[in-house]
Length: 428
Image (tube, rainbow, N blue to C red; front, side, top):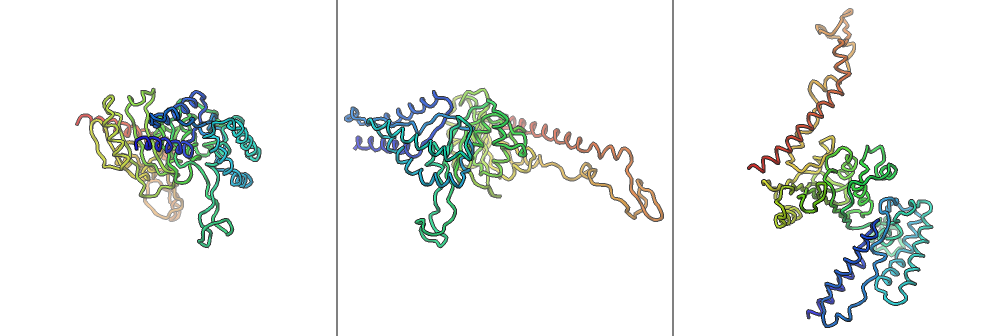
């Protein structure tokens, strides 16, 4: 019946909120808004008018949507052996108490809440050897059931693993999906930036959204999915090169999409990036979408393009939008590791020249060569010693400068090609 379906929809959504949804924010107003949105979503699905007065109590979301600094805590995947055993022994009991608290409406609710907090505090004490900074959101404790390592399904002999035989190492925990629209433009301290991007990796920007992207990789389990709405500057500017290098080497990037400015009406150009936490191979391809030229409020064309890219449809270029597909390995052919949204032929124009006059100038001079008749040589009893004229030495000394100038010229050419590419399709 319709009434039964309504109750089933309500229970299904309630089950998803209970077992699958988690959230963290530094802004308490944002937390309250998220909780209210979930409650309203549940009420809307409970359309049984005959029993609306008997609507079940709304769930307690205190341990689902939490307040805290989600960036400053240590990597939740790095667990000491001692804490790993603590987590395996106690996470299930903690999760059961949270499940009871989620639906509890009686006076037992406050008692359950105190028990959960006490258990979390005990786990935090067990973390003293690798404690996070004060006021951090401690992912390893607050969401212990997510980051608890799980035992391998089978033993080394191939039998079902009941814990009595040798088996593979425990599988690390983590989220299967991380979705975010992090803040842009805010700067963090050098110490926090260096925690995510050590100086040996290069000078990474201190803009918060780059760090949130790095944090998401720590939160994901192997094979987990990542979908962010962020500023498009991470794709090309030099200060985000360490981030791009990490994404290029450690993830399979599925989509890089530029959105029209009217979608979010933000002060910066925004885009979507989706990826999987897994090592890419030579066959990994990226779908790049340029939707920035769509007419104002053309939601229909926007949705169609997003659906086609999600289904890995064909490439197309029009005056309003374009879709390209190219191998992820092409990113590494350009020193800046830029994720361009353009024809893959563009990468072929940016490979630094390794031959030619400039490259030959970098070769060391050969000594004691026994050939004759060269202009830059003096002969002593049948032996020749090469020497460099003053302007040859000057040329070799300033060759790196020439290389930098050549690189700047190449970058200007690429920028002009990108502008011409977009203009061409709008004039066709």
